[in-house]
Length: 314
Image (cartoon, rainbow, N blue to C red):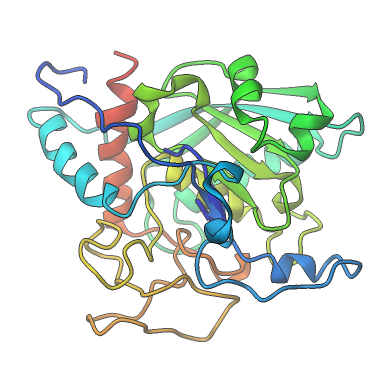
């Protein structure tokens, strides 16, 4: 979905000679997870089959957030080589985080819930659930509440207006918006290589029901935030490009032909060595099955931060 089947929205140079950013010609993306499991918590709505690709894939481009193009992985990898030449990549990153809680007049997210989400982020990125310590941490700088029923119920349609008015900070500041998304979307995020073309639209949007202890069945551990912020830090889905090279551009995440649905015991969809990385935060499994980032993903976050976020604020 730009985490799990939701859409990844935008998620998408300090040193001289850095290459210009990639052209902003993609459509928004997001963590598009299947809504079947989520709808299970809402009996009044008839569940639909969970798609094997981002749920918004069949929607008109205008209705969903921007998504990266399949060829973006190779383009970004090539550009990183140029942008990082002679540039030191930091071993540790602390992300100043500003949270905006949107409401329709009835506040559904407490400050305690926001702090619980930040705790989940720090645990996941520290490798406390499994996988590696990515060296990335999040520092909560502010929590604000904004009443706007339109933005709360349709943060995709109102994205430009909402973010233009509410966004604070530069490329290194995470603006995390908490709203209520559609049945086909858990959240969406911008990628770092999109920042130069649309700085005001940078940030991550997640559904309030996906916060830790939230009412969304199978997506209630706060990992929608972990997944979407992975996009904001520069990671693609583990199933990006299917079994074809360069996949997601990470050497230690095995290729997988399609997103993982539910929480299977195992899955191996490509002939390449290695089972599908279905425990990875950048796949689409249920929250209880997500537990890790790899060292390659950790390295890529730091590279993307240096090339596109730190440099933009220089």
